[in-house]
Image 1 (cartoon, rainbow, N blue to C red):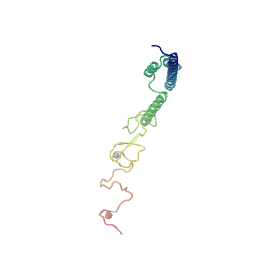
Image 2: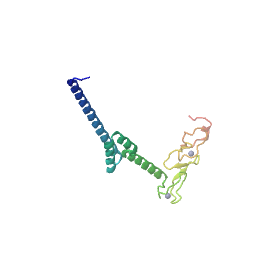
Image 3: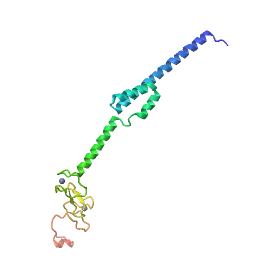
Image 4: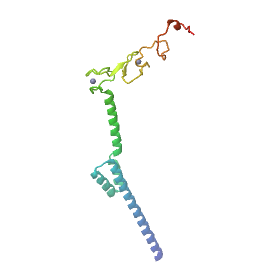
Length: 177
Ligand SMILES: [Zn+2]
Ligand SMILES: [Zn+2]
């Protein structure tokens, strides 16, 4: 069976164009992989050698190189590492500040009332329930007694502040007009 030369010519042109397009797409894809890898490794490390290695790996092996890179790259980005360090430092500072004696900076226990090293007052006891209270607290979180109020009278009217002495006659309920 003989093909006419014009048809062969046309098939040749179509093949050439197809090969050219596929090659161009592959090259573009390959370059995109390298660029993506370069951008990604830059976010994860400042080591120039690691940048070079990642780029060479992807440039040389393409998709397989990228796969290897994804397996080997540092887990966290530099921004994530920075955030985590900030969080840890803040937590540590918070714990140290809360537990250090304000006078001599000795680490104290949460239940201590005075610093055993310098006698500084750390906490006071609740007048009602005896639990340790921070000096800045204005009310006991355990029994709801205001700090400095002392023992409540226990008759249910715990919200009424005692501001003056009450004459015995009014206690029986007889109101004076
Ligand atoms: Zn102290
Ligand atoms: Zn209390």
